[in-house]
Length: 302
Image (cartoon, rainbow, N blue to C red; front, side, top):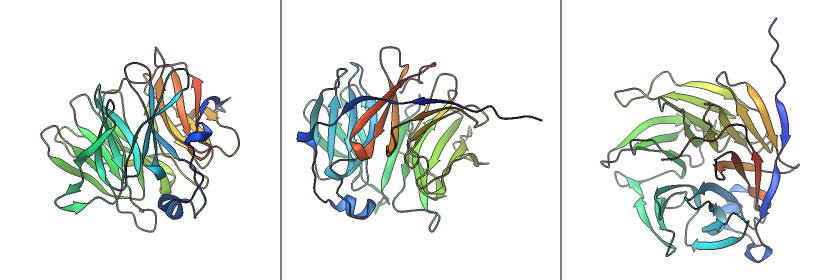
C-alpha cells in the first residue's frame, strides 16, 4: 500500500509590518462589499520585486502602491481612485496593475503616475480583473474574477498578445484568481478561489486550451489565491482561508506547508532576495509581509 508522506510544516517569519501612520482605520466601499462591512485599514496583495531588490505591494481598498526596501522600510509610491490587486513589471520603470475597478492600469514608479493600459474589451467593462503573468514571448495572461463563484461560474481567463490581440481562453471559472506558468510554459496553473482548487490549463501550440483539469483541491473558508512556481516545477499556493502556503510537487501532493500565525490571511507570494530563494508572502488582514527561506529558487519573471 502506498502511503502519502506527511508534508514538512514550517512557520513563516515576520519580515515587516505596515507602519501605523499608513493604516486607515475607517470603512471603505471595498471592505463593505468584500469584508462584510468590517474596517480594513489595509489589504495587501500583488507582491513583486524590482531589479534592485525592492518589494512592491498593492493596498486594494485604498488604491495605494507601496515600495518596501530590503530593510523593510515602506514608501508610498502611488495613491489613486482604484482597487489595485496583482502587479508585474512591464519594464524596469513601469508596473502593470490588475485593478478591479478600472481594468489594466500602468504605473510609472518614478513619478507615481497611474494611466490606463486596457480598460475594456470590445467596449464592455471587465467583471473585475485580479492577477496576471507574462510568458517569455511577451504574452500576458490575466484573470477576470468579479464576484463569480460556484453560484455563477462565469469568471474569465484572458491572454493579451504583444500585437494587442485579446484572446478569451476560459469563461466558466468560479472565481479565477492567481496565475502561474510551468517552467516550459506549456501549462498555466489557475487558482480558483471559490471552487477551493487549482486548475491545470494546457496551452496548445495553436493558441487554444483543451483538457483543462482540476490539479489540486484545498479546503476551508477561502480557497487558493496567489500562485508561484519554483525552478523545480513545484507549485506554491497561497491559501488565505487557512493561513497556509502549500508547496506542491508534480502530482499535486503537498511536500511542505508554510504556516502563518493563527488568523493570517496569506493572499499572495513572490520570490526575492539575491538568489531568489526567499519567499515573501502578503498577510493581508494584518498588513504584514511574511517570509521563509526555500530550498529551490523561484522561476524568473519575464
